[in-house]
Image 1 (tube, one colour):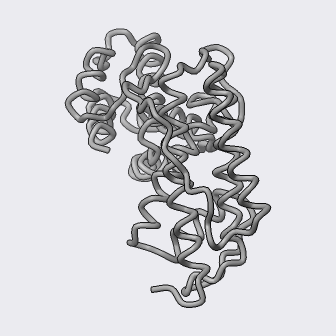
Image 2 (cartoon, one colour; image 1 turned 180 degrees about the horizontal axis):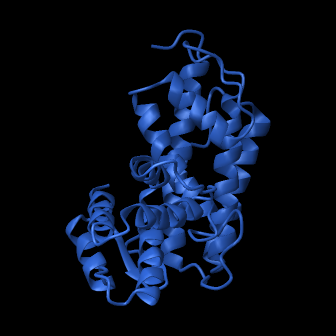
Length: 264
């Protein structure tokens, strides 16, 4: 995302004010932590810069971590030039990122109001799987209608992970999917379809999955950061549910295509 590149430029400007290696390590520590990764000090300044870019692959989490890292520096070194929230939000607006920082949270600005329909049947899935999918979708809708945003998102995130297991053991034409869990399955599918639409969609899916799983992101799967967690707003939950519904729809159609005796 364009905003992430601009925020990376901010990191470079802050680091240029002195102690470049230490500043890069500081931002790397926050970015890795937001993504649920372990951060170790890099072997050189250049590697610290490279490692920071890898830890910052998840755009929304990087923006959130960038804000936290800046606030930490501001508290310790108030004389250092650090972007304020207004500057950060201006970048987000100009980049049409769809986010706004409202300390201490990163807020989604818009959300569709109507749920995206998911096909009731997939020719490649058995009857039991069809019933499980529809039952979980209805449960998520029920929870959302009752104003229980976080459980509604948790239910459909669980369904996304469950639907992904349908690809296990599937011959993709370039190899067989062996992974047992969502991230492994998504990674193998991306590797077998490098540069194709499935690769790109799974990049988006894993970014959303990572954000929702993180304690400093959606806090759905691994719990929320108790010091900064707030109730998930209805608009946010609708956005998450509809995005995941659209991804489930696509994955089901791709599974049907790949599971066919001969697929293009």
